[in-house]
Length: 115
Image (spheres, rainbow, N blue to C red):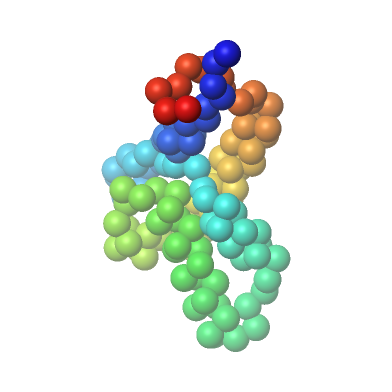
């Protein structure tokens, strides 16, 4: 009887690309924590400069995870419209991935793990 095996590393490969500052970077699925942060970020309105700064830092954290090969200096040079579009793109990619993965069956394959 084959042993059930799920390779989670296979699910963390690039899911597309994005061009920023004339360079193309691979994009990766967001972690559960980044999805939570993205959800919270979209629900809150900044009432103070301190809250606005915290929201921008959260947004940068999400983008760093989404495009890990892109340095922080590139993100800090984005204008607000670019940042909003990139965050919306991250949300769309994450939602597409969630929908696709909810339809995927668990892989079954022979395993080399000891019994």
